[in-house]
Amino acid sequence: QSFGQVRNAFIRVVNQANNQELARYDLSEDASTETAMVFGELYRHGAEWKFRAVGQGYASGLAGIAADFGVNV
Image 1 (cartoon, rainbow, N blue to C red):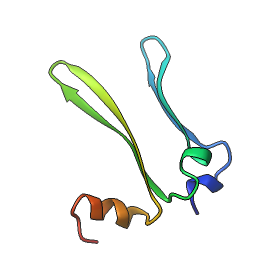
Image 2: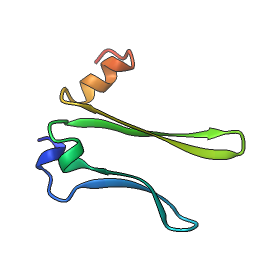
Image 3: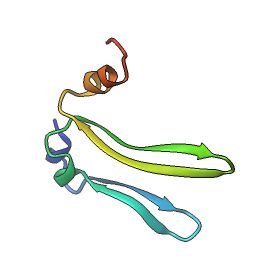
């Protein structure tokens, strides 16, 4: 099953301090054929937390993600 087959599916990143939506992905549109996805990267830079949106989908599932990161499955 792909993300596009899931009704009303989305993922979002929200700043809890002020309830501001920082990033949002509508999975039924943005990932219509993908079965696995890297939405973003959450990391620490100095004293701050940062989020970088990626939005890389994989129709080949987790095996596709593993291959991109050099992991043999």
